[in-house]
Image 1: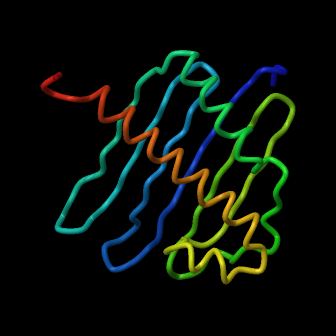
Image 2: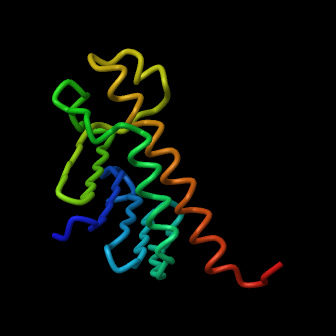
Length: 147
């Protein structure tokens, strides 16, 4: 990968009575945003969306990740994935490549009760920011009736 390369992928999901339900998104180095949301609740169908984002969006993503300080964390003391579900976050930024795996986090109480509350809190807030950004981008890009 090149020194300024950027890639980010997030997954959260579980396998339960409605099958494999998950949310996943990724930003590729060329600006492609891929989004998938699969819920079988009430026979819902999988939602898949793809769009290209401007390099300014990728730069903002890099800034958000850098400011989170997550690239310096380690997930070895975080809760392991369990029957409730799993989360995965993979980030490539320049020559750094990290990959985190943990269980689903219900609330900050779960974070505070973990063996590495500070590191997991960093992960938790970054994921909240990333999801917020992705939902906004997808919502704006695929709006049927523009404002």
